[in-house]
Every structure is written in C-alpha cells, then in structure tokens.
Image (cartoon, rainbow, N blue to C red):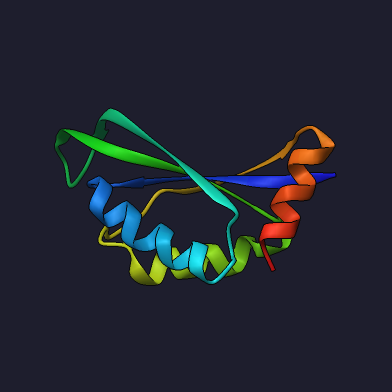
Length: 102
C-alpha cells in the first residue's frame, strides 16, 4: 500500500507548526518531521541565501489536493515549495497513517 510524503519549505518553525497543526487537527495528515536546512536560490534576478525549515508531511495519496490547497492558501511564501513523493513502507506503518487520517 502506498502513501505520500509532502516536502514543504517554511521560513521558520513557528510558521511551519501553524500550518501543520491545522492539518493534524483536521486529520489531513498523520504526522510530520521537521528539518532545518540552508538554501541558496535565484529570486528576482539575484541569488538568495537563507535558512529554512522543511516539513515532511505523511498522508494518504488521496489527500494530496486538499493538503496542497491548504498550504497554498495559508503559506507566507509567494511561491511555496510543495513536493509530493509517492512512497511505500512497512504495512503496519502505512496502516497507521491511514487510520490517523480521513
């Protein structure tokens, strides 16, 4: 059985937690991991360097559109990074994700 991991970047942990806590409360995701990262990228004809927080959200495949839309509507970035990865895992873990989400 498959599920998805969504890779989302945030300017800081507080903003990440605000979005993620609402997704958890609404049962659209089962859990999240937070990772601090350094990033360099092109933005408006310049190179930017910053620190960000990555959230790795785990949910059902069918929740992709709802979760993506919620993040797009509530994210502080003009163009948020929202990446979907279909993955497989041990059966007990996947069952837990499906039991924790709607």
